[in-house]
Image (cartoon, rainbow, N blue to C red; front, side, top):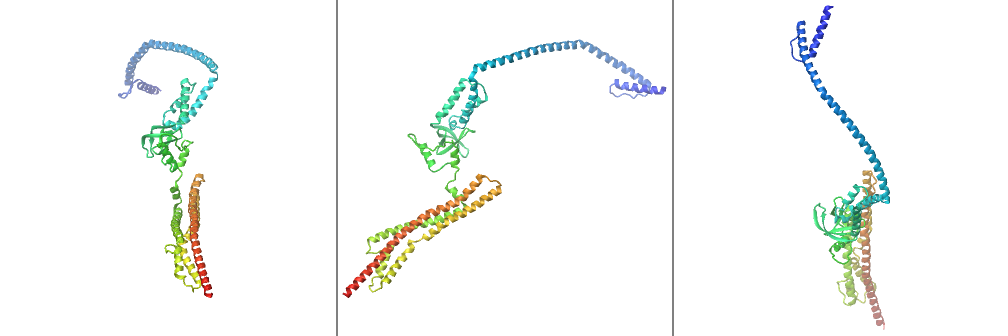
Length: 464
């Protein structure tokens, strides 16, 4: 039993030694004497340290109390200030409510002015921002932007500026102005050049129509310019310095002009016809060349035949009538020859002259008949391609269908375009050739009648 208690005391002493002694290397405890000695040393050492700490705490206790008292005083002062501010805040809120009520009473109908000004400013900003006039007077929309960002009852100066901006836009809408501006070419280069502005509708510069970009606040030359009479009128207007001069206007301020310049020209439409279109044009060109050649030939022959009619007794071989007359003179002078033989010879001479007079007429009739058929082939091919594109894309976009159908119809237009003029040309050629043939037949019939009359006279005199 004693040994047990001794072992317990040894364990407690060892634990106490570890608790009070720093973690330093020390000799191991091997017996009770060493242990008791070390405990005594540690108690003496750490006892002095504890006494010192206690003295320091007592020395600082008075200062800590002073700090605590100061903190309490500050807290009380802050609470009093907070209560004062809360009372002041409540009083100010009541005063603000009273002032707002008084302000509403004094404003009366002017309270609606803010909303009206904001609405007018918004509408004016949209007009000024997109107006072509802003190309000459840039930065006008900044005022309306600032006015919209600072809502409230407007000042007299702001109302005056709103009225000035609106009146300036109205006045410039009816004026033609020349000014130096910066124009961005289609290749992206910005150059300074003279600009002619026609109200808020159109602007031209050095033979080019311009469009206004509100986002960039710059004038841009249209990458594709309108041609024909529109461009000629614009150039004449730009060169005029006095009087009145016509000028094309776009009431939509650029929208219609952009749509107009996107319309394909004649060559672009022909290119959309592709291979079938080229075949139709080749056939039409061949028919046109043949018709033009034959027209000039028939006109020349008609003139020579008319001149031969005036000299019927002196036939010339440079025209059909002269050759027919020469054939009669050469072969129809024998009085004993049968009249039927003479008629056949004259008819042969007339028939010999018909092929050059009726040349190309059969070919032109063929072209007139084949033109619409070729156009129909091109239309069918175009429609097949259009429906194939719709099937591949999987959408029934009206623009896709309209573009394909428009391209398909070009072949039909080309076919009709060559058939109708050549139909009239062929009718004219038939009329010219029939007129000449009629003269030949009349003259040949007259020759036969004269021959029969002479033979009858010769037979009567012989019987007498």
